[in-house]
Amino acid sequence: MLRKFTVLGITAVAAAAAFSTAAFFPQSQVLAGDAHDKKMDIIDTAVGPGMSEVTTLVAAVKAAGLVETLKSEGPFTVFAPTNAAFAKLPAGTVEDLLKPENKEKLTAILLYHVHAGKAIKAADVKTMKLSTANGKDLDVKVEGGNVMINNAKVIKTDVVCTNGVIHWIDTVVLP
Image (tube, rainbow, N blue to C red; front, side):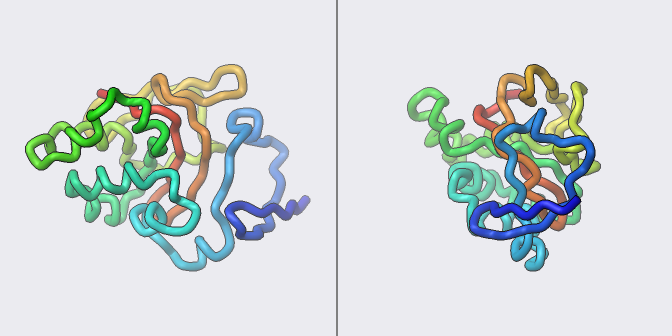
């Protein structure tokens, strides 16, 4: 069965699987069509159309010097805190982390949001531990129709890139 849907102004046609990930990701959205045609990596995708909710993360990735890492082959799964997630941190935290003298701490935090290895899409999710690029595991829990990454709720899934996938989360997770 084919389904037509529009996400971020892009129309896509997708085969409806017998198992729907909507039960786990009720607010999931998938970039399709033109975004895939451009063959964009994680960084190019994160600064592209429809990604205005992750600009703080992009600034942090640049400050940490991780742009080239996330442009490399991968594959990566990036749990991207939204701007609202960063806004939940105590006042001044983000500004402090972006200072050059805090680059090491910022890098450790950001790498805790990245799984290097098989890209984990919504269809692959289950309750499990997931290794991160900073060496510490994330707890992935599927409960009550929601997916939690430690204490962060996944709010958008499967932003597919040439070198992995991005999922938006509502809270910055700390190692």
